[in-house]
Length: 393
Image (cartoon, rainbow, N blue to C red; front, top):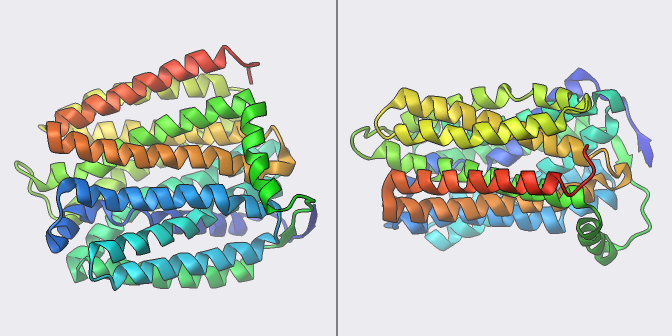
């Protein structure tokens, strides 16, 4: 690796965390606004849910086809360029006059907002080995905080100036972040003799060769599906009787999720100490139990908040553990490992959104909770079976 760097200072970690959160947030502004957008474009619940799915499918495509470029090109230039292109996608969404234009803008934003997944392996590369899990945990906390606080910010901005205001403001912030990243990031070039087709093929070879990667990728897929199952339909629950909450109030529930995400930061340090098996097992057990409180949330807001806290804590904790573990395997291929793992992760998110919207339309909140608990149970079975088929971490 040829690199010119000023080191991984606390200020640079903070910049990368904020940039990661802001980039990934662009995929989630729509979630507390789905009821409003559905009314604006005369959409059904299923059609509105597809807006979120389009963002996640765009993100999955970016993970597979764009993130591996981080092992080929100079990363600061690549990161800044993709940040600006993501801002362009949000400008299309902000000015859209039809559902299909909105889906186009959303998909393009999702495609290029995978810049967040270039920042995570970059941080892992710059970090000292004994602090890698902690640094990854900090950056990933920024990512999940971006996902969750996007709902709060979107709800507040929409209550002030309408749903389009959210995307106008977000695009300006992304452009400003691109400038900050250009000034703040070190120049890092990865020496690699693979061309682009070989680079993509190597992602699939990593999956066939690494049992641990396959297990962790499937865990990530099912874990993030759980996350999407909850958050995709929650706006419909809270906008309907007996709650009848506005977009601003619905967005505030993202603060509960943000608190849960912040609580997951120690998972990275535990992974550094060889406790990855323990954190994964307990995280998945608590994830399943969280659906009991979430199910009671249709009658009780405190129960719903408890369920959100536990679910987001465990989703983030298992995710940090997964990434800390896979980054120890092949340091020279971190971007490709990220591409493989995170493609699976966001395919799970897209599937969770579709399942959630369909479950709510046909079975209400009980249907959503039944799907969530089923996926959480499947996740535990995958972990039990997968762990006993590989060398313990």
